[in-house]
Amino acid sequence: MKKIIVISSGKGGVGKTTTAVNLGAAINYFGEDVLVIDGNLSTPNIGIHLGSPDVPISLNDIISGDSPAEDAVYEHESGMKVLPASISIKDSQKIDFSDLKNYKKDFKGLADYIIVDGAAGLGDEAMSAVALADEIIIVTNPEMPAITDALKLIKLAEQMKKPIKGIIVTRVKRNSIELSPDTVRDMLEAPILGMIPEDQHVQESIAMKDAVVHTHPKSNASRAYKEIASKIIDKDYDSKKDKEGFFEKVAKAFGWGKGFR
Image (cartoon, rainbow, N blue to C red; front, side):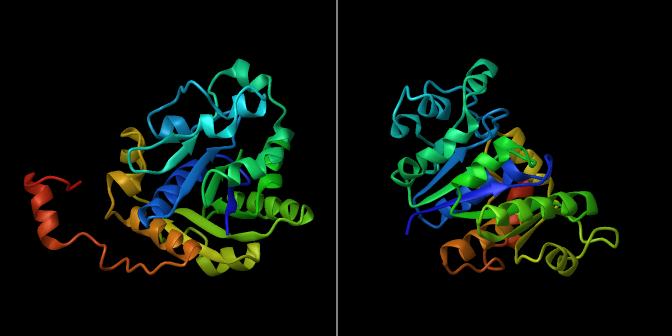
C-alpha cells in the first residue's frame, strides 16, 4: 500500500532533513520505489543536500498549478526519486502552504513510499506537512529542549488525528549527560524507531552533497538508517554483517581498490 511518511521535528537543527534524505536512500537501498519530497517550502534543503539546489521545475510549480507533479520529479544516480522545492524567496512567497495537502493523491501516484521533509517547528508551514501525512516520524536529539518541543509536536499531530510512526533520535553520543532511550520513549509515549549515533561521516556526506547511506555505506550512521528503513518496509537486514571488515579497513587506509570510502 502506498504511504506518505512525513519527517517532522519540534525544532530545527536536530537532523530532520538529513534523516529524510538518508531514510529515502536506505529504503531505495532495499530496492523499493521511494520518493523524497522537500515539503519545507520556505527554507528547502533537500536539493542542497543532494547537490541540485536549483531545478527547472519544483514543488512550488506544482502547488502554483503551473506543472503536473510528475514533471518535478528527478532521479538521483542511486535510483532514488526526488521532488525538490524552489530555493527562491520569491517563489516561496507566492505559495499557500495549506495547499500542500491537496496533492496527496498526486504524490501517491509517483512512488510506493513517499518521504516528506516537513518544516521544523509548530507553525502553519510545519502543520501543512503534517496534514499531508499518513504517518509521522519525529526526529529529535537526546536533550531536554528538543524532547520538550517534540512532545508539543506529537500533541498537535494527535489533535489532527495523525498517527505517530515513531521517534528517531539523532546525534547520539551514549554518554552520561544525554537522555537515555527509555527516558525519551517514556516522555514522548511513542516507540523509538532507531538511534543515529554521532558520526563524522554524516558531516562528510553533507559536504559531498549526498546521503551518508551512499557515501559511507558501512558507517555507523548509515547502518542505523538502514535498520530503521528495514523496519518500515519489513525487510531483513543484519547490521553486523554490513559492518566494514578488517580487510576493507586496511584497503581504505592504504587506498587500495575502488569503492571503499
